[in-house]
Image 1 (cartoon, helix red, strand yellow):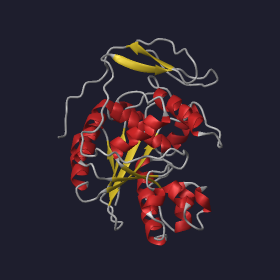
Image 2 (cartoon, rainbow, N blue to C red):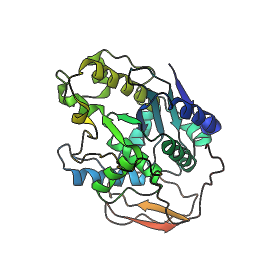
Image 3 (cartoon, helix red, strand yellow):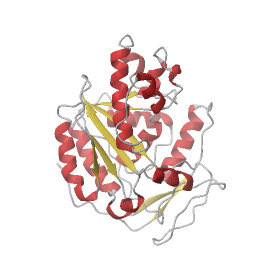
Length: 317
């Protein structure tokens, strides 16, 4: 089954299809693409440092794509949707090397600027979708940053100050979560999870549909790998991997109030968060909108008053 590319022009129509699909396909594999890293975490660092770096990166940048692939526990796939978000090299922070790499991988940066989905509009639709479908199983591969961008999207705010609050929010927003890279740690012959999604797929004999480093294709491959592991390594129990993310010790706990409305934080009106970047980071922003200089400590941030940029006119439900 192919991947449906979703842009501003077909957003509502495809959300309706996705909503209907989730009635029968309750396992959702997901992946994001984002414009690189401003700071990198040492491989052996602890949760506090890793989360501080995550927060610095995610607070400063926006995701480019989100891939969603719903399936069922029998491995049948209901479809793949790739949502393409508005991005402008004149307006947004990014890593130049990452943009060049993603462009070579097939991401259409010209169309992202002309037909990309407004993140606030998508957040409204996605929040309604999650409120409607509360008992999904969410599957990722090494998904710490994917979840960072999704929590930022849903809360419409900066990431929480602590990793404990971050994992709590993930549980409230998504419920049950599986990280396939962590899951691979529990399986003999999978190099204790120390491998890429592509290498894991090759070991398992799973073939990719589409190109690598695009969110739709990566979410589809994550789905296929997850189903293959479930069938091949049926001795591992869900309690061993549910709620664990590969790169942090803190565990995601399913909310005890899953029937309550989805947590949705609203920042003060006319407020836009600006994050401070380390001095040795090269990033690019133009100034067609009113801005103030970014200046504070590497992991600090401040708010500045800005005029609202987008207004949501369409609702799905």
